[in-house]
Image (cartoon, rainbow, N blue to C red; front, side, top):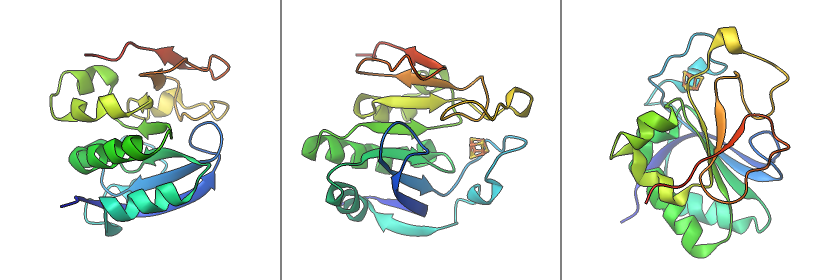
Amino acid sequence: MSGTIRVLDILEETMADGPGLRTSIYCAGCAHHCPGCHNPQSWDFAGGKEMSVDQLLELILDDEFSNVTYSGGDPLYQVEAFTELSRKIKERSGKTIWCYTGFTYEEILADERLSMILPYLDVIVDGPFIEELKDRELLFRGSSNQRIIYLKGKPDESIPGTVALVQPK
Ligand code: SF4
């Protein structure tokens, strides 16, 4: 049986959440409550509507050209269902997956539950939004503490803030 994800919004063919065309899934729920968060209406875990992983999978695969981004809210609060979705996307396509999260990479690695998704992601953009480090010039990030971490593949060094990390075994 497929899991479900509480979805606030889906943007198709967007260029705002990573390089190239992407299908962006904005999920509901975030407990980081960063001061100055661009989207506090996304904090409610009961917000949006429930969609099955398989519904989302079909919508993502229907677009032959777009890669995929998860944002929110924080997708890692629904890590089981996003892991299932990511595994299925990787089984059926060559799409890359970017995931935005308010957790740092180190926090994710230290948590067995959160880290279950890492083998299926290409990039995480990590860490909370910090208002004092906000910079409108940053590409694909809100504040300069956030890192664009390539878990696999060659980092795109033309994007400032890009970091390569070796995927844990
Ligand atoms: S992690 Fe993102 S969605 Fe959550 S409070 Fe911080 S900026 Fe807002």
